[in-house]
Amino acid sequence: MSIVHGPDRGSGRAGALAQHGVVLAAAVLQVLATPVATWWLVGDLSTVPLSAEPDYAFRPWPISAAVARAAGASSLMLSAAMTVLLVWATSARRLDVRWWAVLIPLLLIGMSAGAGWRVMTAGVIGANIGAGLIILVGGPAAASLALWSLVWSAYLLLHPRGRSRSR
Image (cartoon, rainbow, N blue to C red; front, top):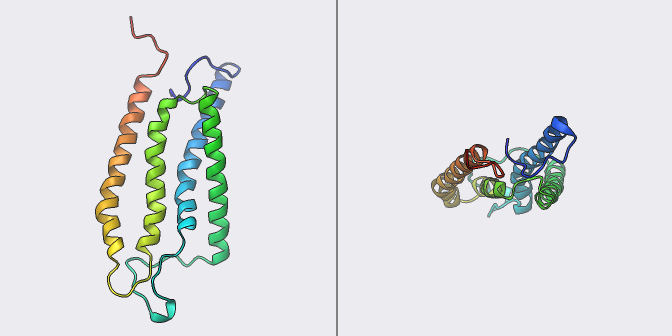
């Protein structure tokens, strides 16, 4: 795996694997925490009260306010901590800066998914036009960003920095 460039700063192979593991875990946690944090920060987008019997494109999950607050706040703190760790790893040259071209699109997908879920589960009177737009525009946009991340990560794995180009 080529997420680290420069000389290995760990003690041998075990240290290098630990570095890769920490950076990879930070990236995965960041990508997983971002949608939940965004979902919580956006909040309920219903335009009518429950007493008006709103229509839903998708019914929201039956989550209590306390559970939503705990999940959102912890995801927000985890996302912030992982951002700090990834920025530190980049500045300490433990994470190749080119990997941000993979991480940022994945984070955009996560933020779009969190906000999009709030739009799609909003209680409205009549049709939820926002839900249709999320599906028609957000789906292809997310697929494009995911494809970019997949192709770019494959490129980075096949072309690590620091390897001699001459044979």
